[in-house]
Every structure is written in structure tokens, then in C-alpha cells.
Length: 317
Image (cartoon, rainbow, N blue to C red; front, side):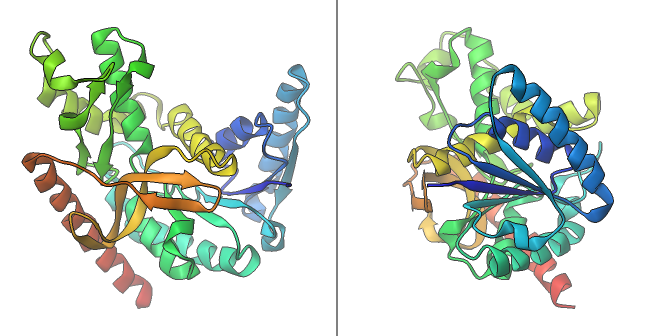
């Protein structure tokens, strides 16, 4: 089966890095790098540069520059990365209204030209944008997925791996809730080598509050030092796409629209663990939280729901 992936916003830092990473995947046959007409020459240059890099490894990939929505046809996945990017001092929620207008327009075009595709949202604030894309496309919620807390979960794994000097493959942890200040690290169920984290903490100098602060500010720290996040998000996105395309059925934490499946929370998109398959989200995985984590999850739901409501009102005007 031929697999085609389209990237909207391909001239941006994230878009082009995702394209390069996916071009090395044997399971993907064509990557459409979609951009505005003003950026298409830049995209063509990126493609030539990527081809040069792939030649070193004898990889033959097809990358197609485009400004035409018709080129989205037959895409298995359409990735939306377009939007105003966060600058130092900005929260992800500051981007909500301007980016919602872009995501709404693109989701409508995807529904028209690639009605059988899965929409993957990266544009921030990603939880709000997931709901915007869901409603604008009219797709089933299993086929509209936000990057959510997948990257946050990977960052938490890295922090713990570095602290304990243990291979990251031994660490199983998860972050849920908002991809932002109201993210919820599930430390109560985190395990290292199958052993609960709390037993490691008893005999170590792990500063849990400091760990949480460091996790929540990870993106801002990178932005303050180099201007933008790049490799982490791109590889996390490519990992999601690869999981879907290869029907891997891994459990990853993404943003999806909730209708009471987790702690009775409904009418909002949040990061929760799901089983990902070729058709999108196969199922939301049941969660167990302690009281503090549950309270923080409810806070995340209220915050994201409030911003989502505001954005939807702006779009209606």
C-alpha cells in the first residue's frame, strides 16, 4: 500500500525537520511539503538539500513541493504545523486566536481534499487547536490527533534517565493534561525497571518539585537559549506518524477530544494515553491517578476548556 504524508507549514523549522526525518522511513512513499506561495521556493530548496543528505544513505524518497490543496489527495496523514510560533515570554495560550483561524481553514480544506486522512495537529496551543480542527473537519475524533503530551513524556523520561544514570528504556512514565503550564506528570505510576519511582526517591536526592518545574519550563528554556524548539518536537511528531503508518499499536500520550472517558472530563481536548493504529486512535487507555494528580488534571481541563470556548466565540464573529 502506498503511503502518502502531507505537511502543512513545511517551510517552518518543525515542518522541514519532520520531512527530513520521515524521508528516511521505508514505510512512507511520498511526502507533500505544502506551503504558502511566498515560501514555495524555500521549500524547493529544502527538498534539494534533503535529497543530497539522503543520497549518502542511498535512500530514494519522493518529496513534493506544493501550494495546491488538491495535492493533499490520498494522504494517509496530514500534519498541520502552520501558525504563529511562540517567542520568549509567551505562553502557548497566547497564540490561541490567531492560530485557530489558520487551523480552522486548513482543517476544512483537508476535509474537502483528503476526507479519509488522519489530521495530526502540532500548532499551539495544541489541545485547543485539536478541538478546532475536529469541529472544522467534521471527522470522527479518532482521526483528529494533537501532539499533546507525547514530547513532555519523552522529556520527563530524559530528566529521570539523566538523574539516575539509567538507560531511558528502563523508565516508563507519562505526562497528561495540557501541553503547557497545566501538564500533569504521573509520578505516582512512574516505574524504573518495573519498580515504582517512589522507592527510588526514598534513597536518592531527587527534588520532585524541582523536577516538575524543570519539565514544565523545558520548552521555554530551549526557546530562551536558541530561539525555538526543533529536534525534539520533530522527532516526537515523526514517531507518532511512524506509529500510525506502521500500525504499531503503541500506547502514546496525545491530545484527543474527551467525552467522559477519563475521570468524567468532557467537551475538551487533553493529553491522555491512547492506543495508536493505522486508523488513528484505537482506544483511550484507562488511567489511575492519585488525588493530587486528579486535581491537577481537572485544573488542566478547566483551563483548556475556557480558552477553547473563547476561541470558538472569536471564530464565530
